[in-house]
Image (cartoon, rainbow, N blue to C red):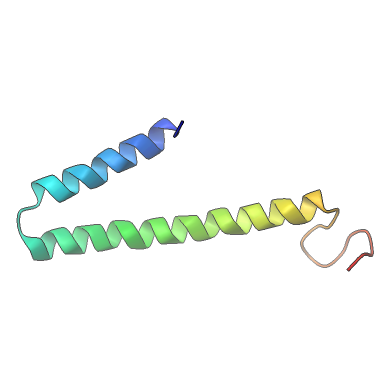
Length: 68
């Protein structure tokens, strides 16, 4: 199940869609949300990749077990 913060975010997106009647304003607001979420997903990917490297015995800086 999604954490509460994601549920709240989804509700915010739905409110934005439902309450902004001007299409240009709604598009701008949704665009800002999309950009911020895309940036956040990039951070998550980076952290997950770092974690995978750690799980494989590497520190993410090329050092580690000596294995390629």
